[in-house]
Image (cartoon, rainbow, N blue to C red):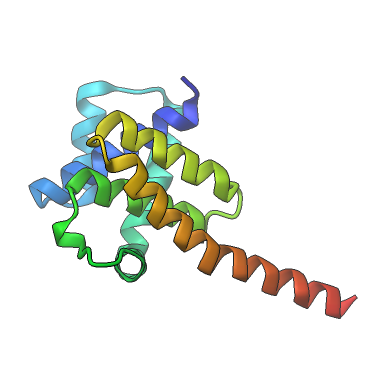
Length: 149
């Protein structure tokens, strides 16, 4: 397993713990680190992801809810909700990660940690977010660059 995939698994576990136990992200992170002691490279990327979700969670949650027809965040399973948070963070705030990679990784996490329906549920919402927000933003930036040339 690659280091980034392992870091995403750790990030989802930390996000899940903070969400379900109602503890701060920093406490969930410290607890995980104390029990499992992953490599520093893996831990560093996981921390970047968790910190990014924590910093932007309000906006991320609003976006997820706006794209999840008939599903409030509170009705989603905690694991699906946190996989969506992680992937939405990557899609919107991490230009160094290709959107298709973020979506694929989220689907794989959903297959590993979620229910039978999780992968298709997560894929559907992330695909809609990508098509509407990420793809249109990329086209807009590209268009502005072309006009400036």
